[in-house]
Length: 184
Image (cartoon, rainbow, N blue to C red; front, side, top):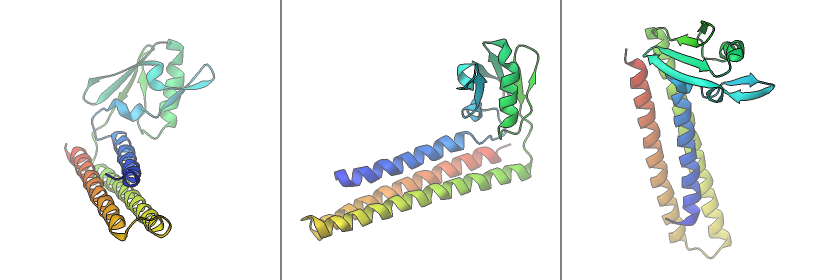
């Protein structure tokens, strides 16, 4: 594969990785500790990721348990969870915090699927924009450098194949996540 095409391939790959990371944070009715990945706690004046201040476990299918190493952090962790967009009220017994996930309603599941599809469409648009940028760059190369039209056509074809592959990957991710959300 041409070096110039490889640069655009890398950008498309990053777009897919970003979508994948985004989809992990959408809860599908089951307790998934990854929904806490973006949460930070005020730990002695500095924002610290939740994973670095305590042990996060999933003792049951619908519960996440957070056991902070420093018990004085319980209030700060609860405050961070309440301020986030998780939508779950934490409960604590003085030593651990529990997040109990309620059963998702059919309507809420459909809303989550719409959200997943929107994120997928955004990723596809980003991938197509990268393809457009690549094709523009190739055309500029044809005007300035001594690259033949056939070589430019080959690079555009390679870029189109890569684009198709990543669009297919995005579709698969959306389909898998939608299926996971709609499974009761």
